[in-house]
Length: 294
Image (cartoon, rainbow, N blue to C red; front, side, top):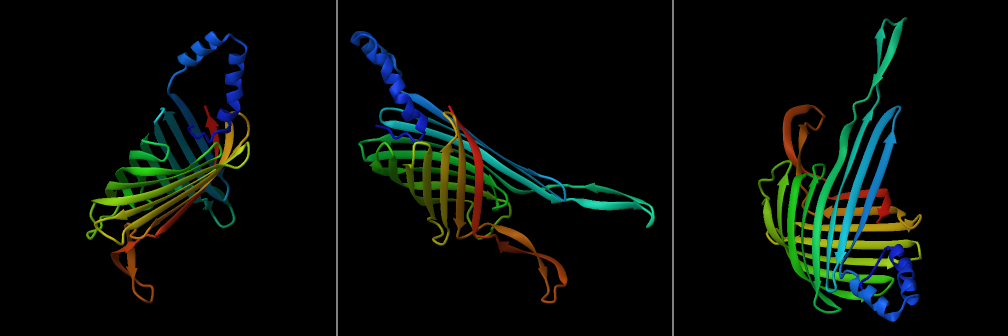
């Protein structure tokens, strides 16, 4: 049995069985035969934040996913983006010291921006072993890269799969092509690697689902270049189709992309020169979104 994290699927099972009990067995069998062997599940996420006054902050996040199940396979697609603009309100007095008018303006600048697109196909050979392959694209200029394209293929195993719990691990080889905002002369733009990931899902209650995914990427051309991506989420149902989802994502890059920094003398005097320095290794993102399932 395929695992279902959306509670509405489980609650809908009795509704699908009840009509079959009220009709002759022959008609019930025909009804079962006419049901499609595959099905799609969709979800959409929306997060917004707006502030104004002495400061201006605008955050807009949009995401969506689609999943299709076969008897021995699963295809999942996911895309989304998050953009934040912020700025301080500037006030200007026009006139004389005794008589003036005050005007203000705010020019918010992007302070966070991330877009991604991912697809994955999984084919089961048995209840515990499966083949997995996928591709992904991501853009995050504040982390230092204009684009990152990756391919992965490998095997995985299912540790637990019940009505309420699912735990699986995947092991694969990867190819990554990355275009940085600031070129690193000591870093290759494309490289092969090894990836290990673990996904855990748990239905905590009839209306609450927990999911956690940990992914480790190792660059085979540079052993120090290790990346870790930990994504956690908790979704609580509002009704049959809507849920509130909180998420925390931590991304660690042991060899982060470079950025330009102004060079100053020890006394703080600018030299007018720029030097290359690494960005922060850890990025964290906390989100609260409204999710629609259909």
